[in-house]
Image (cartoon, rainbow, N blue to C red; front, side):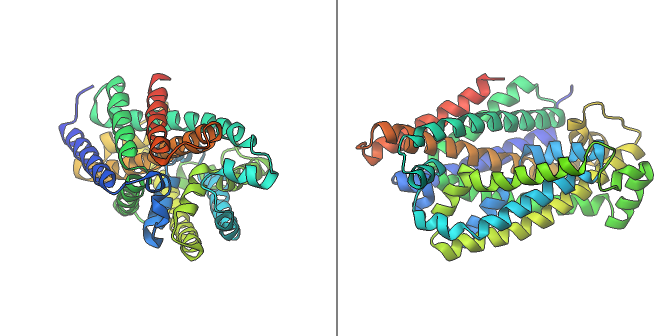
Length: 377
């Protein structure tokens, strides 16, 4: 596969920019409170865009668009509705989360149950879940960049993994929040521009339905059932309440008012974004069909759209959006593994450890899970 110089240079420049923000975050991280929860001083708009960027991942960009290419708009019923419902319900209990004044979900579980030993047990379960999620993100990012740039997958795994680890380790939530702000704005703007380029909403819907009427049917091409959609909604609903990164970010905000604002604002932004992403999936299907391009692996639908259909200048815009989505989700999950390990496992067995030791353990754990994710491939 030939290496695309334009895409490769754009990708490299973007990663260097992210690393620069991470290095700046390092200068603002003075203690474990800064690393874990931004010194509990996360402002409303920084928290909002960090939350938005956190929720849009490699699964959303690569998998979501691929799923729409495969089964149509029915994907939105099970995923988007559940996502927004979960965020909406979390809004009504966020004040209680702040009142408990705990950094992590295992902390909250131990408080509510009165059983301190539940902290490390819950932490181990959450770390296992985070590890699998990190693998998915790394695979999604590597497939995307390999397809677009032509650089072999095995090299992309190392490069992207290195960047994820370094800037997260340097500044913790300070680096994560500010890179998320940048990535969230870039991601949102670029996806909107891509949709405008590919055509209007009415035109996309008409052409997508013309390919197969089931594309725009509520249950898709027989893949989804009412029970399946309800189950998906419940799953996303539960995820919003049990996400370690959500609990950490809520406790990082300045006050309850800020915590509520960032959930409400993020819910609106994510709801609009999900609709745009669904339409972009339909537009991708129409564009590939009109160009006579057939995709065997639906996860490659979006990368192929960039490399085989769009002009380079538009493709560059879209790859920035895709990479923003992937980086912003992975850094949040990676940061949470460091916090969970130090606070809920190391802190349980070494309750008298000083802050400098807790900060060191957080960073060591971040590196460990980043490397473990890579070695699992």
